Image (cartoon, rainbow, N blue to C red; front, side, top):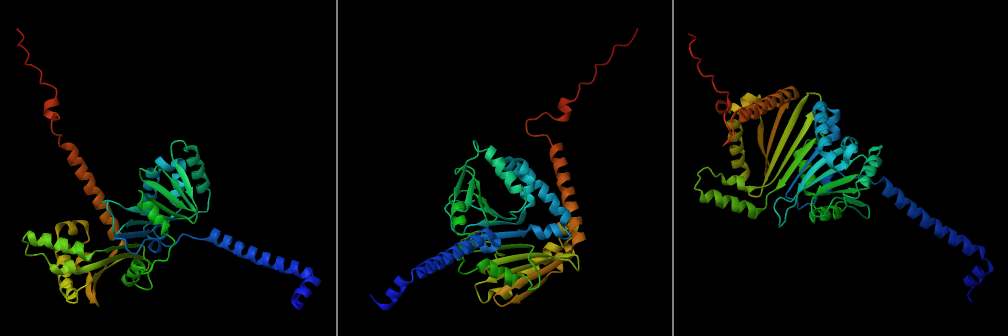
Length: 369
């Protein structure tokens, strides 16, 4: 027996001290991991969506509720709560109010057209969560539910269903895309393609109330170009098919009470940006001078947009007062109502017209003798 072993045998308390210390370290590590798990917040949706996604879009609902368009955000909340009533029941209003950010993602490669998923970042505090859980429990006989780790799935696998993570990340879509999206949600994406595009598109001092990005594969662009060529169109604008990626950012500027838009078109051909700039300027001028744009009150905002070349990209910036957007919204609603009335006034095929259903004129009465 060596001296260290003899000393340890001579002092049995030392073993207990070491054992307690080791147990303390394990407990501290487990406790720290538990606290991290409990405090884990759902990431920004652009961090959730995979780099190879075809299209992504995010909307900062929380910022809109506090900004100049709070009334429009409130109307959107009310409409969303009505639509969610079928699944969530009476707790739908609370669940909608808990939404901080919403998004849309379309995968880059899929064998099924029309595949997409909706996403949301939720505030998990408040009574709405327990109320929804009780509502879903009451519907457990008709609404399938299953749990996989930190994820809960609600709805039948054959149709669209909801996936909710304990951190507050919610996904809605069809299988198997829903599961693959959930599995990669908390992975660190290698390229960070869309977050980087959003950063290049927006001003450093501004937050993105809305972002939309799309990646156009080269093969897809070649197919589009060949279709245009087969149609024999002289205005095919080949520079348009050099756009490899596009990003749109919208933000509300509080000091000027205006909505600012920035569109970034990134090209994969060196000679494309200069030609693309000319094409975009001509398109904006034509659109802004149209009767529709003038009627909606946005003609000057379109024609006044700035177009410049920045490296391999064309960047378009425009702004419009919030009051002008409200006027445009009212005019769009009025036009929609007028179209509805016009549609209702035209009888459907085979339906009797008003003249057909009108009461017959009374027969002339015989003269009184």
